[in-house]
Image (cartoon, rainbow, N blue to C red; front, side):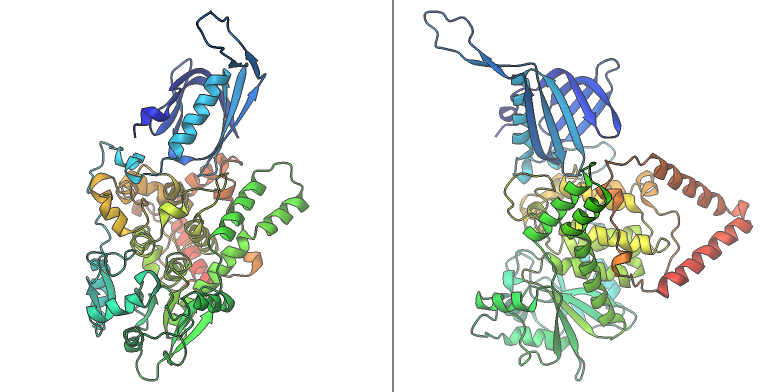
Length: 569
């Protein structure tokens, strides 16, 4: 397929671009294979540079529509043509931005809309923009090997010898959605792992997710066991989970499905770990929504945020009926439960739902942000995303195919990654000194997960990335974000290292709407940006050794005092 076949009209003059909060601009609209460009008429400045993959929905409206027949010769067939003065295209983007294009001429308007729809629907990974993007300031190999699992394993092996790095999945034959290397109990051989994999949905046998250095407890993740209606058993799976616990020790299985859903899964071949076969493990059900209910919740919230006519009562009603904040609360509560089991109960935790690629990763990743100060640094957080979302097999290509505006029939879309980012934002709001990065990083991650110039979030798992040669043919987002000039924009100027666990409040009054995301294109951010720039300037002045002053000591005192208050909540 050639991109040129999908572009019916490449250039249109005298197009008016409108966007909420900005003055309208008139100029020349151009469509390329991956971008929509608009250059203003007088100076030729580029006013719009939109990645077409970012378009979630295209709505078109035509004015003064009519038909006419040009003069007919004896040999020509009857010709009826569409005519009219103009048309309007509304582009609803995956990053929640809404753009409006007023285009002169009916035919041009319909052709532009059709071209954008076709280009934004290209589903072949290797035809996407990251495979064509070549910034001169970056090298292809840069950033791809910044967070190897071997490096994380070395941190663990320096504190315990009970775990090993297995390459049982080197060729992806044991589990197609796991990376080539996984961390497993040292006492369990690769053959036992293969048999345990056949007993877990999709081959996702229990692997180590996090080692808690404070008390040497661990968190594992997997998919559901395939016990089925006949209560099938697997000795290797039982042994794998048994070797993790010493005699008399107990572990907790946090199942992200309801007890009823887990019971129904058993009738279709899935199920749970029976007490008789796993006597040291106690199962806790903490249901978290995924799939269609979560996607619809996201769409309802965005729709409510985009309606300027709502009264206070109707706004609050629609916010509540979207149930998005309830999902945030449930995710934070479940992650806190996992963290509490490890930190306070000193117990090992296994997290799984059905497939182990969605709510499972949401809980394990969020629990680590709560527990581990290294995951709250800029680089440590990137490493966490690489381990617990990207390499762990969250299907980004499927889940982020559409955002909140799409009119397409839902398939496997679900904003699990956005829900995780929202939960991290809630943590940053409740603990403003404890995360090294700010909101800008979270917004950038959301944008790039749905549409990106970088290959980091492409495909559904490491096997697919290997087949598509993503790491050889595209640039890594981490390489861009870790450039010094970019890093500076992402840092939290109020950050002060906090070695303690941060326990968030999950009371309804404590969970707030993430306005920086959901109202990003609706409210002006100029004053907030100026305020943060001033905070950055003050912090830099106070941190200059030559300017050590009472103000600096006061700032440090305030930071220490607030960190102490945060951890006494």
